Length: 349
Ligand code: TXA
Ligand code: MG
Image (cartoon, rainbow, N blue to C red; front, top):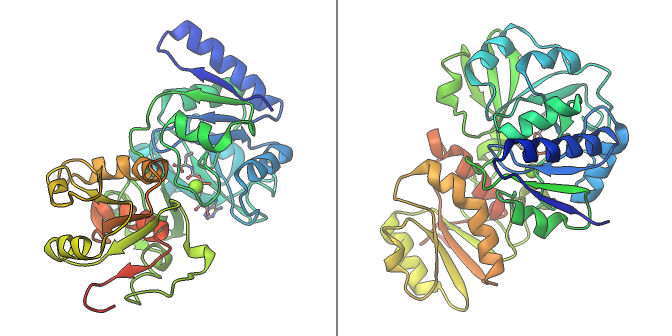
């Protein structure tokens, strides 16, 4: 299939024409990659069983992993699910934006979209292109991240093209994503409490302004914490967002990290490093995460840097393990999976 590539230029008339065509593709059961504020999504109608099947096929995604359904306005959740009062409160505070809420689903959403489950994950993106496409198509839109299953999520249209060219109808290039990591996914537990199933830019602390209690699902942090080093062949289910390069994740002080890299690195390697610290690693490629301590900037760059490591054909990438809390929890959650949940503790190998 020939994948049509369209740039969103900022010229509102031209952009509306592109969006109108993309909306036609969606209504006819085709697939369009779209920018969102988190990562690029692979969009298809959430009302058509066939579109969901095409999404799974294009990504090579196992059919037991449900898709997020995107709506133009928070109230539209009523059309596809049974939102409760807490959903309304969360929507007021965080939508449109990087929050996905799991709700009991209505029967208009085919089982293929929810992988057979009776719940549907609902998100209302703030990106204007995503918003307009949903609105103009008139369909709620199923959209997983637009990467090959298992690869780092795409944060530019070029990343999408590398993974999806020839497999989908259209790619809308709206420039790089603002946030760079996927939305926070939560389940509502009743009683005003919620559980974070996947951390993102809406943090536990922020959710705590609305929810009585915020829990974090054990799988967000584990299985990495229990063992210092996992065996070389971790179960595939632990591996996600992974570059082809061997990602070596190190749990140590910054000084020990620097020493470890200097004494162990060989071959073609790179280091995920703050701008200020990059000078310490002269033998390898600096993969710059931005200013030291800037969690937002690091989150925005992570996936792009993992892809750059592969473009440069690096064999190994070294990275520091961030704290599993607050603003760095989402980064932590992605990077432990990208490393197949193998964490090196120097001195305890
Ligand atoms: O930021 C995002 O959420 C991006 C953009 C494109 O909107 N989308 C995204 O979709 O990350 P995907 O398919 O790559 O990840 C969806 C996550 C998966 O971890 C999936 O297991 C979970 O959401 N999920 C989807 N439906 C669910 C449900 N009904 N119950 C629990 N988890 C669900
Ligand atoms: Mg994904």
